[in-house]
Length: 342
Image 1 (cartoon, rainbow, N blue to C red):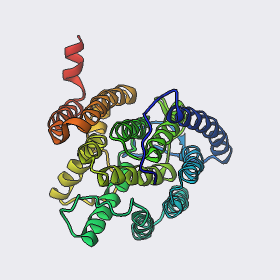
Image 2: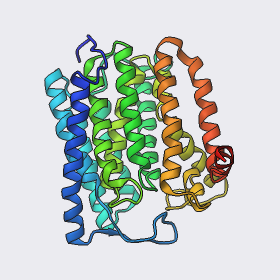
Image 3: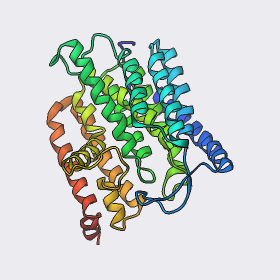
Image 4: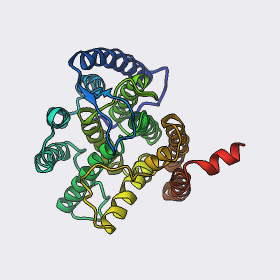
């Protein structure tokens, strides 16, 4: 990767990448929607669902058919060797689509994820240790792979209501692009982040509540994979506070929920409706109201991540406060927020 940096300019290359991917994802997702309807590929409501009517599933094709060519073009332009990473994403698309259509066992899905993560670890910036020298190089890569596997799965777990995964992907992509530019990191990271944000925004046009289609595992699994790689690359560059702040809400909601279910002896791999955002929906809040609250929190996290370029780890403290406050509001069904507005 190039060592020089380019400013994050919405009128410059990053803005052009964002706009192009947003438009392309919007168009492709519309085409995918018509195909899913013709083939009656639907997500049917059940006792664990947060929706009440059959809805086409597989809209992630529109996101990934935008994002993979965009990332390939960016990598080729920047001279970055990302082919193993993109091949890993394609593998996860294929496995996840089969899982969407007829279901696959957890061992096969985990094997595919492990192979994809191993391929992606190989193309992290050479010489950059993700944990900044706290671990020997071999352990550094192993720990990074473990964290990446968890992120892939938690991103998939958190895709449970209209608009939440797309808005989170947009926030991470935009925040990462801004941080990378301000920190003087290689322009390729700025462009990759802008592309991820654009593809997510284009998909959100169709997925905002009430959603016309769902992302499905074919989108959420490879998208979480690519975002996870970006965050590891950001951490490896030394911007650990930003790499933690940008996905902090998803990390907190998924991890706390997992630990609570483990403590109760539940089968954590089974679908459920116990995430904090799902509690708010069950309390009567609309999907849109819940996602708007998450977007507000993510906007604050982006601002703190940008400030962390100068002020470092101290920015994580207000970030943690913001996320804890959001989790509390969601667990209360956003009622304290509604009273404050009233």
